[in-house]
Image (cartoon, rainbow, N blue to C red):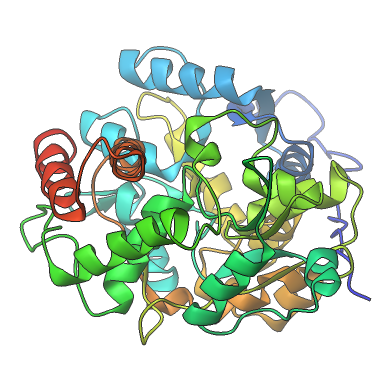
Length: 425
């Protein structure tokens, strides 16, 4: 029986500071740093534990951690980076924000020697959005991955006497078989891939896994290709012909997201990143490996290939007066043992290769098994605003399925033009 294992992060307690007697030696002034992150209990406890350990070894540096609800956190961080006033010394930062802020001076470039080590030791996609003109503007923590694995409601498969599909054709046929419609409403979805992340990421992976590309060497989108046409046609057919799911995940109308519906017993298979697993355990009270599983998802083409964007990272404020001390903390955080502790606490796939391939990771996070073997098959998604990209792909897909756009060819032409006009750098 598999269970998620919570790593207990050791804290070092600073018992005393020994000062010099007399008045001959002046006291060293304490360097005070502030750290902003978003509210997530497991993540926050991890940051504080690593901070306590760092401060125990560096008694001249004091770190104050402040955590905010995500919607407030995102606007608060971006407002401070745009204005270049106030803010924290260090930010927990979504890597994709680097595209907007690395070039403005709002973030401090990483010291050259540290940057060289990081670039050499992490997966390329984890720093793609943090790079600007050869300099690195953040320490990657996470390999953000939305391809290669899917959630499985084990009871639904058991009740229908089906096994986990191992080929693309099996995936489609199983998804169709497990879909249930009552009075014209889809009450159970067999393979619910229609969500904000999965449609765009599956589309790109399907192009890449069949030997195609979606951008040229100049950073322009090239979607009027045989591979892109085949991919978009397949996505369309799965909804309209095979009926493995519907458009609810993009047009609304449901009370829960697709992965939450799986945890509630209403979906059979859902492709999502590993970050959703904790919700099944914590919010729905399910047991990983018993009530649900996380397994390999078949590739559309004949090889493993996918695009990944830059995930969570730590960055230093370009206007901080304490950049040296801030990067000292980030360098401490970058040690394998600290990263392993944090990645496990945050249920993240590690950005650092040595940590991702550490056997201890799978002991502590067994659900990472379908992913750690394919990380080298990823390419950086591209230096552009990924939210704008996803919005364009999803809107085009909805319009195609609903008939507003009459053909796959016209959908691709329209999408390519929109992306090159509004998204491509």
